[in-house]
Length: 329
Image 1 (cartoon, rainbow, N blue to C red):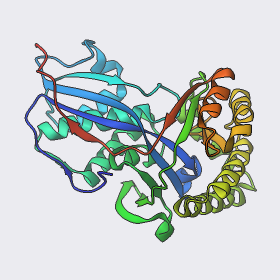
Image 2: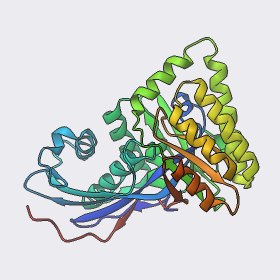
Image 3: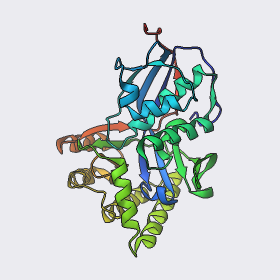
């Protein structure tokens, strides 16, 4: 799943694509050191990068000032990064909880790094997290590490989390990133149409966890995530569905669900092992594990309920692709 090795050196123009993600267990709690299981999904952002006389993003000459993700990504190259023409195309809906910003940062960072001589994947994961955290002000490296690594990725899970990949740091905080077994399942993610703010949701959860029952609530998040990682590794669909429902109860408790998400989860129930919100919540998307043979029914149920459903599977991590000819400066 491309989690090891390097992004090789390649002359400009360079092009890279990076997958979106879906959090299966542990969102929010991971910020506070609890385990998380994240899946790289086969919805992608692709970026083409070339040196230019002025910085542009999809033709916008002011993007370096207005797009904080682009600004931080270019700044991560060093004190004199130069100017670049960046073109992107994406199948990942924005502000949907499916990793659109992580995929953008991953694709552009990989393309820039290839043109600058290449980069180790662990170093790229650290760079992408630093960029996204600088842009958002909060968060954990689950999204960016999953987009870089591909497959099923765990954070803070210890040996139950699988094969070690790398450790990502921010100040005194550190997250151990591992890869766990891929059961080969199809999932359905469904965008509610309601955008969400990761930063606002993370801050709201942090405030909730400061209440007297916060430590016990965080421990329950951790227990569910560990059990979920183990169940996915064993390929136990029934237990995964039960744990998804319990995880959703906890997410309701910390205040990040939404009536629209609850309606989609209810619509999915007859055709799903389990369903829950994915990502920051307060809008965004849900993820559902279909009952065997009922994938099409689940997609139809979610579409009738007003969502935009996407059948997804595990994806490889960020990779270079054949670049188009360099755009004119």
